[in-house]
Length: 207
Image 1: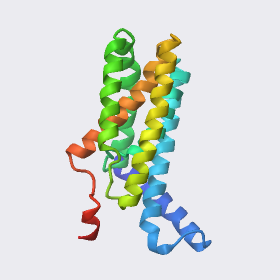
Image 2: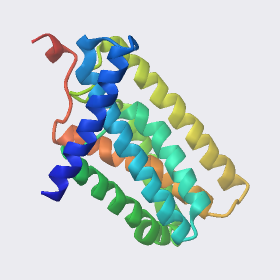
Image 3: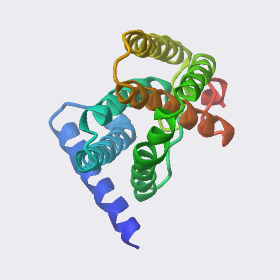
Image 4: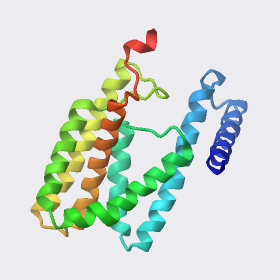
């Protein structure tokens, strides 16, 4: 019930903002469902980022966590991936994922950097082959899919360049591992969406 109240509250806020945009002539009522969905996702993201930054300060991992977020957000926004159906599930799942990165995966990868590079390489191949995921709530056409595919590859290339450069310069490992986990998590969420078929093909848009 508590989770349902959170969902209702977020949806209600999204509806009010969408109605305000429409009434002020800033958006089209025909696309109101897309606006509501976009605003709901935005609210969820802001809430998650505030929680992450608070945890980052608590764990004294602020800069590495910022790097994780920057890499994850930049890539995830172009690759797409799994979305939980409920707001509270998304928030709890994302928070647990970040906690796992900080307290489980990061310590392990700090002591096993070769495994980190291997996982990052596998994740990069997955993203190059499968990104982007066309989520039903986004429903991109073929031109948009191709555009996001190119963007995903460009962002991935820049992120890998950062990792390779810092590795060559022998910069402190924590500043390499957290960004790498951002890439790895994007690939994991992408594959989950593919496996459970949480996507729509271009052809199905016209069925």
